[in-house]
Image (cartoon, rainbow, N blue to C red; front, side, top):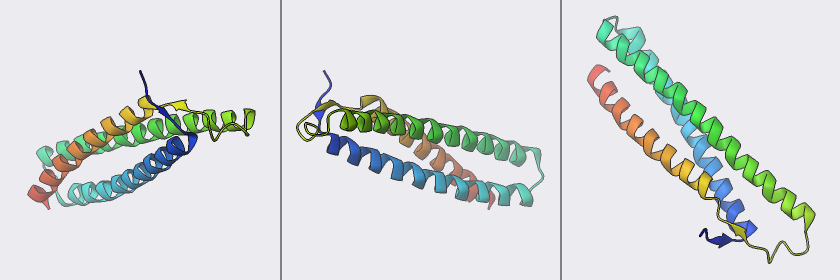
Length: 127
């Protein structure tokens, strides 16, 4: 059974997750720039193939950030509706934990960190 949380706890987690996703989005820009540096420096098929691989992975990660952000904002809208429907009792009402959003963020972070480590190894070899 899911644990129950106050709207304030859920809201704080939403803010934390959205800030993390903004950070990861900035990281993607930095990674894109580093990959471009390698692409401009080398012409071998091996390197360009790896560049393309990382460019594709960054596209996938950006799409995941957008999907997760949308899920979090949708849940926030659900909570906002709850507040509008019953503003006086909202301080005492408990909501089910937003497990789906939590798992999405945790899974994304693991995959992103794995990609970052892989990219760092690539960059250290070719920069």
